[in-house]
Length: 88
Image (tube, one colour):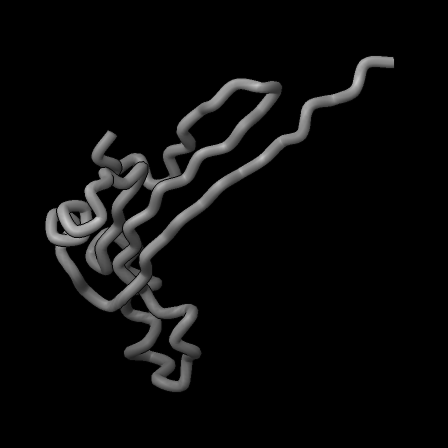
């Protein structure tokens, strides 16, 4: 029986309040697979902290700069999570 190759995902993300994609990309000398600002989140999620000020910080909209790849059957592929704001 042939052994299945592993499925491996590698993800590096910088998550914060607000920052410039250009600034971070220049400092890291990398371009993100996807980039999402707080303004890119749906209105219902953006307004949720207003209606529920006790919401945990991890559920509040953030700015996300991410490089995400996965290996599947020996092939390297880019995975694009937020296509609307993706730079690739």
